[in-house]
Length: 300
Image (tube, rainbow, N blue to C red):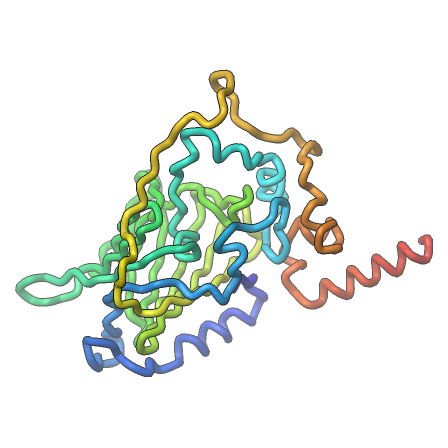
């Protein structure tokens, strides 16, 4: 589920989520408070949240309900979906803040010191683009700002009761929504992994000073899977799909995007709402649209 962070609302919701006790502690049994639970296992996504967006993908120029600023919107309007045919983009990895929301098999395991059994890190492997992620649990600092940025970023975690909280920096530019909306490489990500028996809730909070006016909050769910033929590989071979002159990148100049009204016309919503922004996330926005419609109808 995608949500913006209304002032005062997110701390309350997060507090309620973090305070929920785990119903079952998994194969590791009970752990003392502050030491967490065992998240290890093979997990598969549950698609009852934003299923259309997470599967086939969102409509073009559908930015509704996202706290984007003008820079993010203008970048997305200049984005041509034919960009996917360019070899350099055909195998482009889904960024860490987005990859958990797709069709993905997720494997989680612990890495412990062989002598002391102290938890050093928690590993994640996603079959989508064959990505391995390390969440460091040994209190090491994040690297300097000048350090390389990667698809999975640099992540450190800590247990808050039975919730694993993860802080990630050093991410490359990546998807906010898979229709041209991207966050910058200055974005940071906070995640919460909460296990309830054979069910895993993943909550993420994306912050980016260059593309978002408010933190973007999303949740998704996984079920523990006994693997039964699931593939763990994602072979991707880039090829030339459309022959273009060297150096040409598909894009639209300002005002030339032919899909600007496609989504809004299909669902009969105002075009300005489809262009997103923080106010489109909240119920009060309906009153603004009704007032604008009434004003237009009266000829004012």
